[in-house]
Image 1: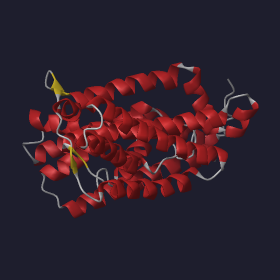
Image 2: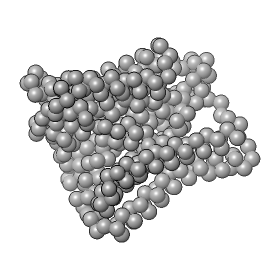
Image 3: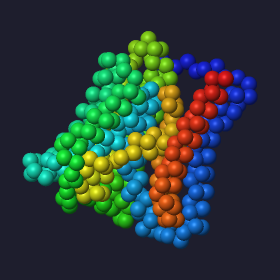
Image 4: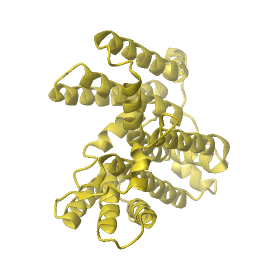
Amino acid sequence: MAQSTPSAVSGPASTVFSRLRLNTGLSLLTVFVVMCLIFALLTPHFLSVQNFVNIGQTLAVVGIVAIGETILLIAGGVDISVGSVAALAGVVTSLLWDNQILPIWACVAVGLLSGAVVGALNGLVVTRLKINPLITTLGMFSIIRGLAFVLTGGQMNQLSQPQFQFLGRGDLGGVPFSLILMLVLYAVFIFVLAKTPFGRDLYAIGGNPAASRLAGIPVNRYQLIVFTLCGFLAALGGMVLASQLAAGTPQAATGLEFTVIAAVILGGTSLAGGKGSLIGTLIGVFILRTLDNGLILTNVSSYYQEVARGLVLLLAVGFDQLRLRLRRS
């Protein structure tokens, strides 16, 4: 397998970049621990068992969707439509169940398939029509959200089937099932990225797609696969959310795409492609979800919560650009 040619880095900039790369995980863990200590001092409810269960449940939706976004960014793509896809998956499942068309497991399968289809469409537009992934998925973001409203007439559809609700509300030994599912998925895809030729090829494609083509890597096919995977995982995150809400609604997962991208970039994945890790993404997800939880417990206004999320996104992207500049200098 061909590796992308690294940029020439020398002198102090090389040393600084190497330290940033090596210490990103440790720095993120430090931020997470300090943040937890601050919230523990500000409110006695933060360290309660029930609060940790609540955090675990909220982690799953963002965490599952962030897996697909991380893999896609590593391969040189991006998907802004994941929030809309998550909403569509819940809507499709709830409509099928509400009309008693299929058993619940089949409704879920169709909902997941809808996400994979949207992802595949994104991939086809990017690889065949050569339209920029950001523009492609931004357009799909509006199309799919609009379709979800059209299908439901803007109304919520109840989805209170007990087996389905276990996905987002159930637990095994006191641990939320959705959290267990998320961690299993991370373990699987960490292995895929680190230990398989497919995973290594994705890094090469993101780092230098032209060189990857010359090396015989099927770039278009792999990009189509990761776009489809990203859509599928966005739909799975939407299923968890619909299970928690006990409903499919077109308003669901509004703003999810920005939270996911913030977590992924915060975790060290580069917007330029070819760099990143799911371990970093997982820590980024923990930081963002814990931040939201702590702000709520300390009665911070929802307006300021939006400000905090925006600042985190800007800081994450800014740090990513700093890494890139140090790498190229």
